[in-house]
Image (spheres, rainbow, N blue to C red):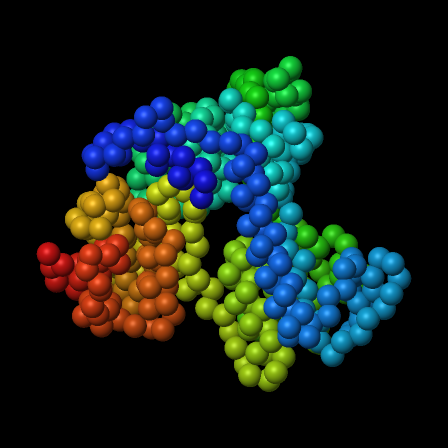
Length: 427
């Protein structure tokens, strides 16, 4: 949030277009920015702890492992029993072989959140959501950024059309450099202000050396892995695949991913089950697990859960990307529909000087059901929720096209996509 404010207030042309000037430009205090983040985390944690206390939930601050049916055993040797157990250990950053993390000059997103310093030149390994968000922060605060991506294309998690727009808005406009199709085979930490971080890259296919980079810092943003090593599950007949706990659609733990049996009274939610590593997905899975424990059968519709990348502008999506939607249309024999609406035609976006971006809607032309949606633009993370909820509810795009959106608001960009999908004009 702070980096976004700095970026906005440093854009002299943007401010001048609205008759605003900021003599001397915007400055920031690194310690103040870091303190703001820590205070926010503390406030949110305090609120959650207060809620648990008011609900009469006992919190036991110990590391525990599964001890068999109805049982947990803590590291200190204490045993606890319960009718049902929900595992929610979360995830930890994945650090590839050859990468040495020192927490100071070579670090993961966990350490980066502390913002102990703002490097002049930082390399980011991985161009996924985490890497993009930190690139957005670092460039706003004045850093030079280089991405190192093992795949042949940047931003592999994005719909390809959205990725092209993101490349222009989030990378090219900020002078971000990148290398694709290469591994960071070896990363040696440096000493801040004394010795650079040395990164040796190799070709992802041939494994031949490519180049050696020297940077001030290196952020390892190569994804996250299930935090399940200490749960002791395999000793109780539960086979993990790369640390992921196998579950069925009701969040019940299985003995194995393929043809596994249900482990009685044991559930697993969140990153540890590997279905979808998003905080709000974990919350939805937790609610679902409780519903099933209480005898009210419930299944989470994961394809209708939205995700977002909190850059400036934001990127958000739900459901299938265009390539997967085309594949499903071919497999199931229906015609794929596509509609695109532009922020540059939206009064609110123009008033904010934020006319870049699109809303892209993918749907089944026969059933008029939403298959996926992708947004890049101002407050995309907020806008995607309307489409995600409509998708989950099974509302047709024709019905959505007749809904009314407040004017002038950004939601009208979404409305434009609904209307475009059924051949109506929004303007």
